[in-house]
Length: 130
Image (cartoon, rainbow, N blue to C red; front, side, top):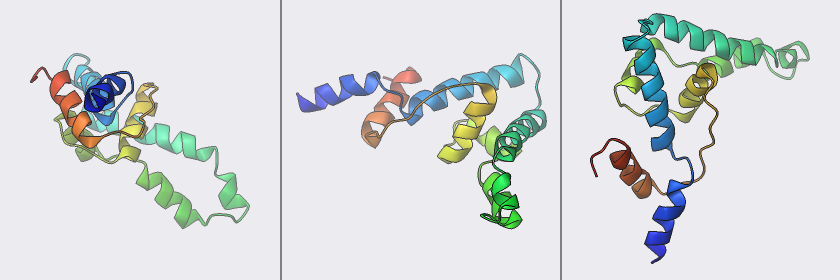
């Protein structure tokens, strides 16, 4: 009964499987239908990340962060072209990269704490395997 209840509750919340499914559909549509190259998509996402971080560049100017630390933060949140390609093909990537892709593509989501086993079931369900 408790496991059943957990499954029902998870269907009402977004798990990594849900956001991965949506983002992969969007990426694949852009690449296959809109003929956007992965390099272009990577540049678009990198520019979006840079723009978002430019809003807090004052932390460098105020001496709170060094320029090197700031640049590392931007890098830590910017997926490479290779990562984006692997992600589109089904490989998991870090949540920071997933978030950067979602923000750049205008996909608003919230991932809550989740049970990894239930998330696996959700992923199989989303792909029509169960």
